[in-house]
Every structure is written in structure tokens, then in C-alpha cells.
Length: 138
Ligand code: GTP
Ligand code: MG
Image 1 (cartoon, protein in one colour):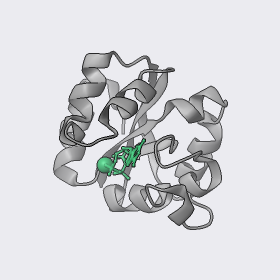
Image 2 (cartoon, helix red, strand yellow):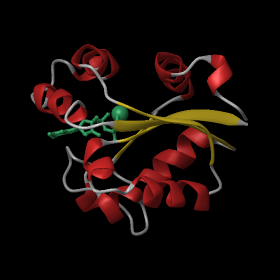
Image 3 (tube, helix red, strand yellow):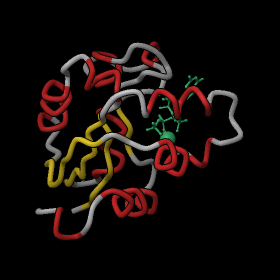
Image 4 (tube, helix red, strand yellow):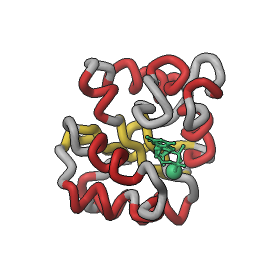
């Protein structure tokens, strides 16, 4: 079984949608094997999205990610990385398929309700940024 890293973003936590997002995750057959609600520091957000630091929206993205608490999660299942990308839907909710998290809940391309790792390698790096081994119970 594979594991991926997920964030329920501030636009969703603010609107009390944590449970609604989790329902779509679980309906897809992914198991939430670790979960906590945290407030990101600016430094943590800049590190986490460091790959985007030259992009024009980087400042806006970091400001958004620290604007409210988030929920960080580890999801486990078959092909968890690819499966969760499918469950989230396209980055821009205008392009997201029916029934996906972003189609159902996202407000805009920036405030798009969920993050999911884009590769198994990044999943391992991202999980290690937020969870110690004994916090993940499969
Ligand atoms: P993540 O799972 O959050 O990494 O999303 P993604 O992999 O679908 O998209 P990508 O890695 O390309 O972008 C990371 C995040 O930056 C997106 O989820 C958005 O929140 C934000 N983002 C991407 N493009 C834009 C944009 O044009 N404007 C703004 N404001 N934010 C953007
Ligand atoms: Mg990404």
C-alpha cells in the first residue's frame, strides 16, 4: 500500500468543510492514517511550497496558507498518490471533474481546498515534514 500527504487548506477549514472533504477521501477508498490541525508558520509554508518560489503567485499562496489553521493528513491506499490527485480534481476548480473535492468546494485556483503530493518521492518528503513515525498508524 502507498501513502500520500494531504492538506485541507484554509478556505475549507474556515468554512467547516473538514468532515465533508474527509467523506470524499474515505468514499474513494483512501484511509486517513494520520491527521492533525495545525497553524503553518510563514517559514514552514515557504519551505513547503519552495518549488514555486519564482512564480508570480508565490506571495499570495504563502499568505493564504498561513491565513487560517490547516489539517495535515497521511492517506493510505492502493496507488494513493495518483488516486488522491484524482479525488482532488484539477488545480483550477473550473476544470475539475464532477464529484471531486475542488469541483465541490474550491473557491478559485488559489483557494482550492486541498493539496496532494504529486509523486511518491514528494509524498515521503512531505509526510516527514509534518509527522513522526509514531504519529502514523496504518
Ligand atoms: P497542490 O496540491 O496544492 O500542490 O496543487 P497542484 O499540484 O494541483 O498545483 P501546483 O503545484 O501547480 O500549485 C500549487 C498551488 O499553488 C495550487 O494548489 C494553488 O493553491 C496555487 N496556485 C497555482 N496556480 C495559481 C495561480 O495562478 N494563482 C494563485 N493565486 N494560486 C495558484
Ligand atoms: Mg503541486
